[in-house]
Image (spheres, rainbow, N blue to C red):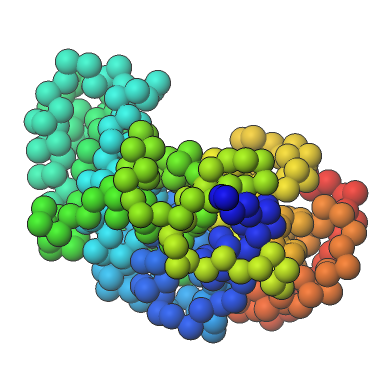
Length: 371
């Protein structure tokens, strides 16, 4: 008989693999590799994701490897910028390239400019320009437009973004610093190209996904990767088969951790694009109906959530002035665990606003709506 996992047990399993049940002592590159990257399209919010997962984390532990090219920010899964190791920048990008191709050629804004275009010639020209020096999208598009004046500069730059593995170069993404969104090719930045002999398979990608996010359905794996037709891949792997309480078929690594559903889950703070929130088609293992009930503005700031007992229990925001920083906590309901959340929030605020002399953690009424 196929074992059945409750939604609570399913959540505990994923939290354990995400280092959100207990923080890890591992080095940042090791954690990033285990997570198969950390979604990182914003310059700095993802540092909170590492702080919530790594004991004693300080910003330099991620910023230094980023500057030293041990870590890079590059478009991979779902055509979205992730923080990955240098090795994964070269290995993962070819595997998920079909998702980036789909993003480009079916794009409502840029797809029409690809029709009849000698894409190979554009890619070659783009690589040459980026090898000269890192360039912004605007600069790259303008230079390519000189050669292809009948195509929109933004579309030409987007073609390079999707067809060439581009690294966002520091200081962009370095804690406490800022800079233009400038790119060069991964090969130029890392001084290496993907080695076909070492290229992992989609099988490997699915196994790594399950190690970091499982147990999961085929649809979950497709949502995370941006790839399609993974049923055949999953069916061919030596995986444990389970079911959730709704009868959906789940797959998992036989020896992966699956803690008891009553294992304590301490309060944790997630950042706006946290992997935990975006890597499953069915997110109910962590995301409660209360999130939908908030009716957040679709085109407004992406909310940041905190977890209580392993599920979304409220949102948080930091307000800063030159002299003070306030962490505003807005629980969805009155929660007996808010004392614990506030203590964790004090530690988070000390991390996020170490340069500000006065800190305050404030819990608002559950009925209060944030504008």
